Image 1 (cartoon, one colour):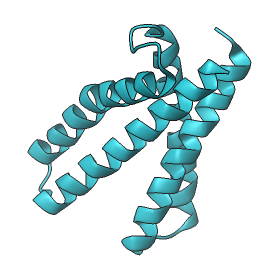
Image 2 (cartoon, rainbow, N blue to C red; image 1 turned 180 degrees about the vertical axis):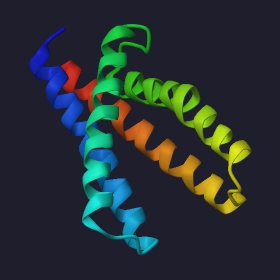
Image 3 (cartoon, one colour; image 1 turned 60 degrees about the horizontal axis):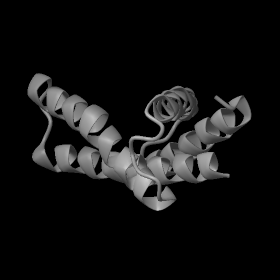
Length: 123
């Protein structure tokens, strides 16, 4: 594994997640430095996990960079976002609107991170 590419992929994923979370926070009028700090730490951690998982599964998503990125993004979405979102829906009183919002955010993040990581790895 090329640690330079891994670090760049981790930062790219974290930046994508932070951008989506910031837009959603602004739309929902959530603010506060505590939320932003937790979001940054969480996004860096998840970015590292997503990048590492790509390197572990490298080669099984296809040869074409865009196809590999989208396949990996769908893989992330199906493996991480859907089960965790549905679990939260079953455990906590959450509206269907919130459920679909979380799923949509997760899909955007997973596809964008998959594309970013595959393009970084292709360089």
